[in-house]
Image (cartoon, rainbow, N blue to C red; front, side):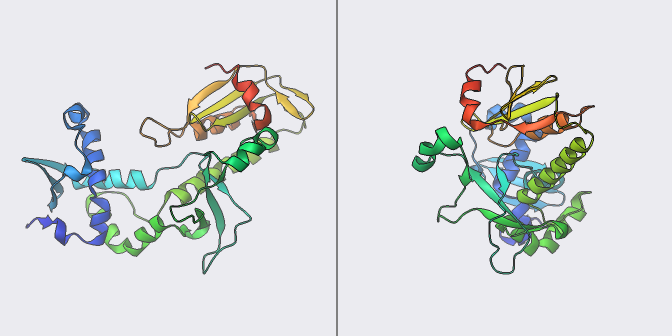
Length: 293
């Protein structure tokens, strides 16, 4: 079988066998070689060709071979990653444009703003909608039941669906369907809301002694939370008795760890479940002063 050179790759194959995904697959496949090749950038891969069930990558005078299965799985893992709970928010006031309907999901920006900084002592740190380089707000419309999203990533997958399906079916057991991180976030958010509703249904008392209060420290990318089994209530402020605990929302690579979803799911899955509450950000700064890991 003749090798399929880079110039002959179809659009679906170009999406899968990108240099970043190949390099990431290599580092995960051969962790002992990571130090040897840690300085290599994606642009250092001179050429890529497909030879049977292998991907042949030329780096200077060296040829590195990886299985197409592993690279496809890496591509799929990357495209199906779930963002942090704090990365997005359902933005109900957004108005759909064009033919897109469904649930609006906005990417959040926790960066500095002179206007918001002035209001922070009163309102707390309220994130704004993230914008792209052209100043367009990053709001995406999800059709959950149809597994559709208005983002470019989903559209790219859908436009090249047949070619991607062929590659997946030939080399993996994964059933391909167009997906994106916004759909993944919404699925996780919906599951969390369902669990939260079920937890509240189990309690007939308006006072919840078992409380889990959380706060997102966007500056350090950490989830701060406190739990108590004998919560006190005063002037609508929860006062948990134990110290702050922390979990990293992002790893050293900048990708979400999933720890925020896990903490919340664990709290709601206890018997009896904890009452999950976002801490008032106007007093979060004071509480952070006594934070303990």
